[in-house]
Structures are given as C-alpha cells and as structure tokens.
Amino acid sequence: MELKDKEELRSEILQYWLRSAWVYPFEGPDERTYLRLTPGGRLKMRRRIGELEKALGVEGTEIARQEEDGTLAVERDRLELALMVQAYDSERRLMQSQGAVLGTPAVTLEEERGEEPGEQVAQD
Image 1 (cartoon, one colour):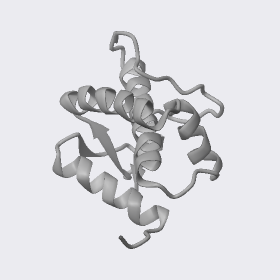
Image 2: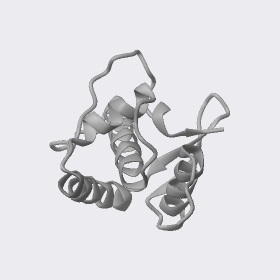
Image 3: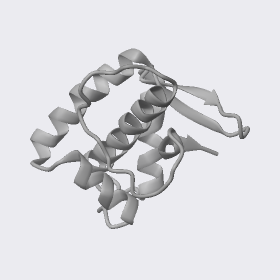
Image 4: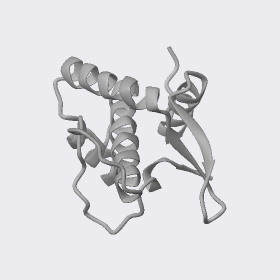
C-alpha cells in the first residue's frame, strides 16, 4: 500500500462522504462552498464515530484537537475520526444557531476560537 499525504487522505475521505450521500455541497453567504451533513449522514456519522473511537481506543474530541493543532499522525482512521468529529460538531452548532432543538450529541468540541458554524468542513 502506498503512503499518502494528509491532504490526499482528506480529499479521499470527503469524496467518499459525497458518494455515500453523507454530505452535500452548500454555497455559503461568503460565496464559498461548504459541505453540509445530510440527516442520514449525521446518523451514520454518529455511529461511525463510536465505532472508530472503540476500535482505536481514543476519544474523538482528542483526535480532532490533534488535527487542529497539526500534530495528528497521517493515518486514515484517525484522520477520518477527526474530520467526522469536526463535521458533526460544526453541523450541530449551525443547526442550533438556526433554532433547531437537538438531542444529546455524540461528541462536542469546546469552542476555543470564535469560529462560525460549518467552518470546519469548508472547501475552496
């Protein structure tokens, strides 16, 4: 198996999510394209986050923090978990900012910066 860099893996993961209908492209008010989770995608992502956390023996929020800090090793499952946690948390924040009442989250990232919801899954 050939080694891939982090951006190649990220692109591969996002393409899989698009093909599997977990996400759909959405043009934001800033004329950038964002990926939003579909309702089914949120459910599948919740389940997959739990599976990956159990298989890897780590908390998804910790892996997501490592990714944000740039210290996450280039490993597909860990990168996928980090991206899932970021996407899931961003989507929930966006939905809540629009007035949606949601149940208990699978994971929650602490707001360390004043980021806009959805910023984590932005695509140029």
